[in-house]
Image (cartoon, rainbow, N blue to C red):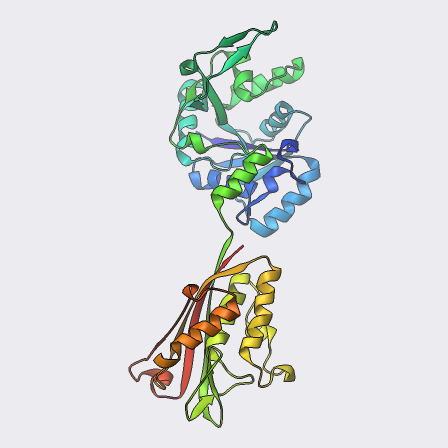
Length: 385
């Protein structure tokens, strides 16, 4: 049986307090809508979907596709109406011929799971409808017109969500009749009930987390749950050993008969660290920022260059969480210099020393490091928004 989805994303989201349609709000770098489409695609339950958008958001969606797409599930776009019911109806009419089952889902519910989707589809195939629901956990009271209060038995109450899944022919007919009669409803289950009787409610694991993002408090809580925006970067650099050069590692001068050759002071450890930071920021490498044909950087102190990179970190709204550097050299022995190296890097990164690690290793005389021809370094960093 052919199963499609109608994804409703045409609302204004005024209760969210955001300056945009809430479905385009980013969660850890990916929009609510993108995460919703990811979930529906990954469920493997649908042959395709129609996305219902406001005409004012068509260009915004095109930009989203360019940044975060493609979204292969989406086979068509429908323009929303004045009400949610009209928007869903437009989406249903945009579906192709031959659809048997349709799931109607709010784009503002990005946490839907495969189990939830499958439960509603299986119910719709057997009973004509399948609406995901959860038990009501709070005590609910009904206020009468005269102000009197009636306590309701919550054991018999359910809160319904989306997806709401139906036999396509019947839900399309219900929407067509409601459009002609001007019937006002709050969801598709109410519409189905009005014309066809009871809907089938289903439960599934994960339904409690299948919440709809509606108010600013929802988004504030979401940001708190998701935690900080974290970036990870790694860097690598290598330089040849040469006579008549100072050997500088992690901003510390090492007593040795040779040094590392390079345009700057050739501090291979700090270069690897800067590459790791730039990588986490998505800003290329040190060659892009400090080209070796630029006379400004001839003999430059790499710790000074690190200050420039750290300014980029601050400008982008991040801080360094921790850093780990490995220096690969057969000789000289570096153990005695490690405490000072660690201290210098911690100062450069504006971190306590406990968040910085500097270590050295040999290659058992293998490779250019083992043969004493050069020194390499690797670095990893964590950036936190």
